[in-house]
Length: 113
Length: 111
Image (cartoon, rainbow over all chains, first blue to last red):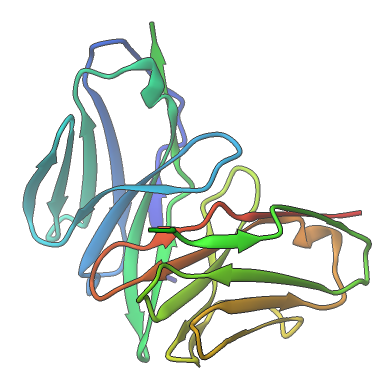
């Protein structure tokens, strides 16, 4: 059973702080990893993708991947109240010519003004 | 350029009824996937279609079916609705090795 694990939170940080979100996965052959942001009642929005070990930065967001440890993280610098949402970690799995995302249950982030 | 469009936005059905949900992918995207998201959980994979062929199916009963049309739009059908089918149904399209883009979803309530 391929799984993606996330701490459900809520993770509460003050405005301007760094929020650190973590995710572990069980499938060793996964090649691509994604972070989605989901506001309450809305659909998931892709904010970061990462395919190789190391860090990838995009604005205030940094994704980190360690395939040996099967660990993905998302750092949000200078957190804003508008960042308050659920963050979903997703791993892309290939099985029999099919591709599918396996999601964690999400971490709820609360940024306090 | 339009993103992934889904219809209807909201739907209320009675147990035992049938429902059809529709999705149009981003122009040029040939892969469409369907996901079910119940409250408090991450989305669960239902189907993937590519070039009008079913490429993958998640752990859902045969009451769930789908198809993809020549213009790459897709329908998800659910028969004999159960209360537990109440969820947000998401359609995602993808091009190459990039991330999946989700539509705004269809909120299905079964009463």
